[in-house]
Image (cartoon, rainbow, N blue to C red; front, side, top):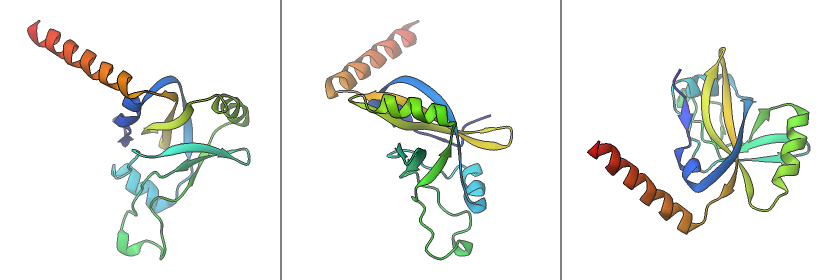
Length: 145
C-alpha cells in the first residue's frame, strides 16, 4: 500500500545508516486524518525522554476541525511504541556525535499505522551539492538510453 506521509527531505539532508519500525500512539480523530493522508513529517524528529521514544513536530490536523476538542494542538508530542531493548540501543547510538533519529514515512501495516524511522548522520552542504550533480548525470544518462 502507498504510504500515508513521506519525509523525502530527510533522505536528502541525512545519510541513513539504519532504519527501524515503530508504532505511534494517536487519538481516534488523528487516525482518521492520517488515513486521509493529511499527516506532515518534514521538520519532525524523534527523541528519547525518560526511557521512552517521542515524535516531535509532526503535524496531524484534526479530521473535522470544528469537532476537534478545544485547544487541540496539531503538532503535539506523540509517543512512539517500540521495544525497550531497541530504545536502549538507540540511546547509545544517539550519543554519538552527529546522529539523529528522523521519521521517514508513515504507512499502514495490518490495520495499524507504523512509522519508519531512520538513524542518520547530517550531510554537509558540499555533500548535498555533489548528490544533486550525481542525480542530474544519472537522469541525463537514462534519458539518452
